[in-house]
Amino acid sequence: MKYTFPEAFKIGATGAAWQMEGEADKLPHQKHFPHLMWENDKERWFGEVGPDVACDLYHHYREDIAMFARAGIRQYRFNIDWSRFIDDYEAVTVNEAAAQYYSDVIDCLMENGIEPVLCLEHWELPAYLYEKYDGYATRIVVDKFVQYAREAFLRYGDRVKMWFTFNEPVVIPQLCFQDGFWWPNEKNPARAYRWMHGKVMATAKVIKLFREMKMEGEIGVILNASHVIPRDENDPGDCYAAEVARAFYWGNFLDPAVKGCYPELYLDILGKEGLMFDFTQEDKALLRENTVDILGVNYYQPMRVMAKETPWDDSQPFCPGKYFDNYDMPGKRMNPFRGWEIYPKCLYDIGMRIKNEYGNVKWLVSESGMGVQNEGIYRDESGIIQDDYRIDFISEHLAWLSKAVSEGCNCHGYWLFASIDNCSPYNAFKNRYGLVEVDIEDGFKRRLKKSAAFYKALSDSNTFEYKENL
Image (cartoon, rainbow, N blue to C red; front, side):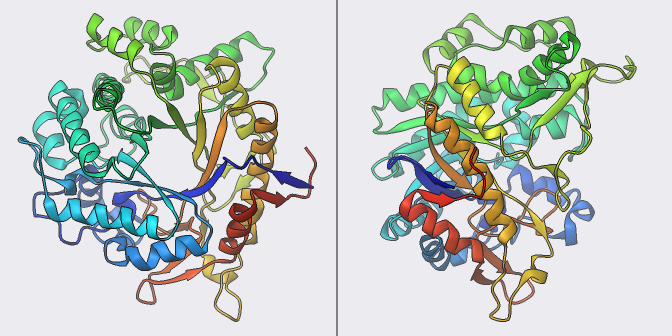
């Protein structure tokens, strides 16, 4: 079956500063939060590999971007590391060498026929602002983020026409401070929700700035797609569980970004649990008046939940799991390497939810991908990794996305995670995601995988073949 996307639909890929650049040429104080995670918890990172080197894109970007073009990447979303870009975090002054580096990357992308898309942060909060002010828990850091955004707009707004404030803003407060799963392994829900609110307000303030500066283009935020599926859609208890999970893992960022307000269920539960953050009338007005132009949605796997059946220990700090249990659906299809469910239809479901419940706001799939361990075993005699599993994964997801677009969903692109193999939290280089291989055992040599040829054919024509007719 042949599937076709509209001409305006863009095929692209993504990267993140801390996962790719490495930390060469940074000043001694220019650490970011992921570096602290790695520095304080190295034994948990696969092979004790971290962001200090990553895949050293900082030194290889010209070579890498040329390979991105050969892989058919037409839009490339990457992040400024603001711990690198800013050299004085109190005065918010720019490091000129870093500013020139990002300018050169933008120029190199454009020279290779790739549209640059800039995100202001993918967890690269400067360590200084975390240690002195507790990051986004304080208005001071929110305002410094806005000052940093102004400098980035001034430097790159002449060439960059699509901007995002944050990529996956829920992850650090959720995994580090709510669940205590990542360093600093703290279960402090009040801190987590202050951080989340700080990022929500930072997004609204930067959008306001973008419009006040009369910047050309569009701006939004990139969120994890916590597409929540109840065990039984006809069971009220399961449906309530799904509503709670949706409010805490998606709606708390999605609703302010698109609707200009938090979900009532989210605020009600936080109030009931004594966890309500400082939320002024001025904050509420700012959210109402500064919603996004475009939304990025990162999708990897669905979240399945059911009504709460296991007892809750009230001596434990609050987490949303107090109101629901995760549902381990029998027979679900899994990626055995990453331990994530593979459910391509979710892209259709997400598109329909955005269309029907969020005003059909303009959006795109800002991350989607398949991580596989030991990809070297799929290398052929010519040295090329035969990653047919990645081609199948992309095709299945795009088939369902195509169905959503054909039914009026306002989706404008699909970006693969990732352009190139890179360092992920704790897993480091264990699971590979890239169209471009990084052989860390052979001097970080780069090679295109088989999927790169498929991706180029896809982006050249906006068409692809998939075995099933949906």
